[in-house]
Length: 331
Image 1 (cartoon, rainbow, N blue to C red):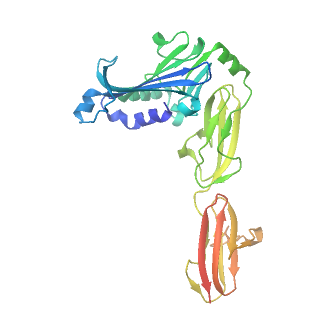
Image 2 (cartoon, rainbow, N blue to C red):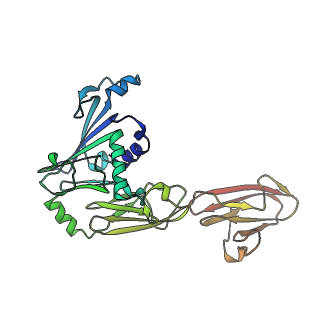
Image 3 (cartoon, helix red, strand yellow):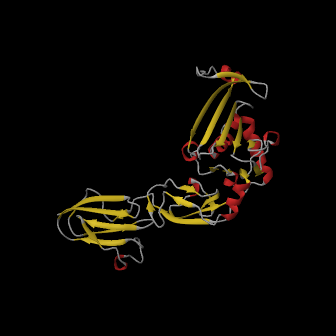
C-alpha cells in the first residue's frame, strides 16, 4: 500500500481498460502490539483470458462487488508494522492509523485536479483499505462511511487526499501530548554520500510531511551538493538533517593518464562539491588557499607540481569517497 501504487497506476495503468485490477487490504492492530496485514489481489478474468495470461494454480475465481469475475489471491501475515507494512508513509498502532499520500508531488495541482487523478487511478486499479484499531475510532476521514463504525474505518481510491487517518480517543490524546520531533535515520548530519542514502522517517505518533530542499521528499528533488531534509509530525514537531551528495569524482586537468613527460609537470584538481584529499605517490598534499588558482582557465582548481623523475600516481578523493586516479611518468 505504498504511494508508489498510486503513482504507478496514474502513470501506467490509466491506459488499461477500466476495472482490470482490484486490491483489497486490511490492516488490523492487535493488542499485543503486532499487526495483521491481509491482502487480496484480483485480476480481471475477461482481460486475463483475452491476453492469454497464465493463472496461478492458487487463484480463486470470484465475482466481486462490481459484478465482474476476477482471479483472486489472498495472503495474510502477522508481525510488526515495520516488517509487514515497510513504509514510513504509514503509521499503524493500537490507537493511530495515518497514511501519508503524496498527492503534492506536484504542488501545482489544485483539489479538483487531485481528485481527477484519484478518478483516473480508480478507473485502472481499484484499491480498498480497511483498518481495524483496538478501540472505537473517534476521528477519521474514511470515505466509505457505510463500512466505517466502531473500531473499523474503510477507504478506497475514489477518494485520494493528502492522507487517510483514523484515531481512537487515546490516540488523539497521544497526538495532543506529543512534543517529540520525528527521527530521521540512515543519514548523518553533515555527511557526504556518493549515492542517495536510504533515508528513513519515524515518529512516536505519525510523520505527516517529509521534504527535501523545500520540496516533497523524492529522489528527483535531490541536489548534487547540499540537501536539507525535514520531517514533521502530526503535532507540528519537526526535525532537520543536512547532508551532501557528490555523484562525480574529482577532476584532474593538465596531465593525462599513462602519458610520459620530459620535464616538470603541473596539474590542477577540483571537485564540484568538496575535495577531501590529494596524494602524490601516497604522500598527502595540502589543500589550502595558497594552492587555489584565482583566475584564468583553471580558476578555483588546486595547483600542484611534480619535479622528480620517475613514475608517479596521483589520487584525488572527494568527501563522498569518489576517487580519480592518474598515473604518469617523468623522464
